[in-house]
Image (tube, rainbow, N blue to C red; front, side):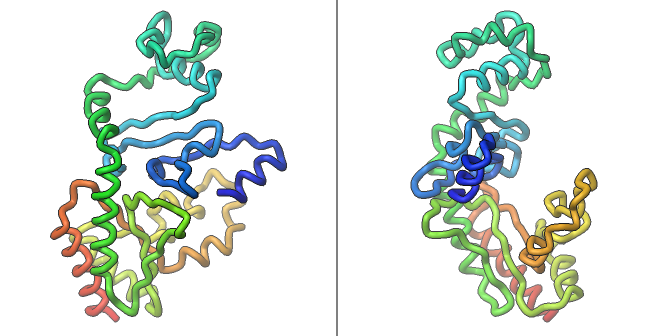
Amino acid sequence: MISIIHICKKYNIILIEDAAHAYGIKYKNKLIGTFGISCGISTQANKLINSGEGGFILTNNDNIMSYCIVASGCYENYYKKHEVLCPKFIEKYLKNTPNFSLRMSNITGALILPQIMDIENRIKKINNNYDVLKKTLKSKYIEVLTQLDLIRPVYDSIQIRFLNITNEQLNNILYEVNHKFKLQYFLSDGNARFYKNWKFMKNSKCFHETEKNLYNVVDMRIHIDTSVSEIELFGKIITNSIINNV
């Protein structure tokens, strides 16, 4: 993060953080999402705060806030519903900003608010689930990728590198495990986060080090409402599948 900030300052680049999964995480005791001029977070079903669909743009920049309030669908006088959070000069954006009608419903807001109030407890619970799963995944064929000591993590997912196994063995493991729950290989054709699947990028063949680092790495979501016994079962299923196929 420090390197990214340095590059942005050097080349006069505006930093906007994609913090979809990252809110609640701290780097050197500073919250992710507060390093840039603004950030986006998600409250989709598999996130720390779950409203089914939805999310937020967070910023302390009045111009960005004004634009986003109007663009979300606060045309005419609807922006006044934001009350004290509404920037004073928002009216200059009213007739110059398209309305994308992305307003959050009252039901969604009602789902989100109590989860925000309880966010630290939710972080503790989801990190405990991660610790339980990590302890269950004891195998010489598994490396659990961990965060640096400078980071207060929020583990809504776990990344696992399989060691000393072939592609065929990995595919067999994934086939077995995915009958029970979702374990996703980063380099698969169906993974939206694998850069070679980004057909909109002309230079998608350039990231050789990225592909090397993602080799045999899989990703699994850890849901806030998953019980400890279910987490332990997930770990046993993965380790048993390794025993069956290696």
